[in-house]
Image (cartoon, rainbow over all chains, first blue to last red; front, side):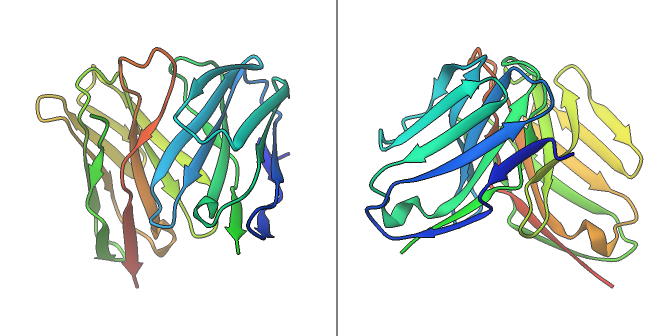
Length: 113
Length: 113
């Protein structure tokens, strides 16, 4: 009964490819997020959705396109993958968009070769 | 700015106390968090503190907040080898409107037997 689940856990792909990472939460939360953790373990928010609407977009290249078909799902699609996109991508959710604690998925390790 | 600073490494012996320090920059942050990341895993919320509190204790964990100096610390009593992980402090800046966790650089705690 994983609260926030991401698939796949590992993703190895070639430069120029397009790939998607899926995220689902069964906590009944209204808000979902994507965070990126680089090779130095630095974590930074990318996007936030509240009730399927984009509320935070942190100067991420437009090759990255989040999609939220419903409030329990937030997928991340990446076009024309570059070497610098290699990172661990974490999905998270929180009860609301204001100040409640976020629960994180296990992460997707993306390696672009 | 949004820089949240932490020392990179801390090494302790099993049974000792560990103190992990964090300096944040946004004095209007209302919530401050500590997350734990074990190797290859996602982020686990350990504890949080409201900005109107000076201290919060939760079993082996003690959080101290010095708002004047914008300093946050996490003390782990009777540290165990299972506590070895990376610890991140995080703040929600007060001016963002929506929740946007800003993470510290992470402290890698190594507990030796």
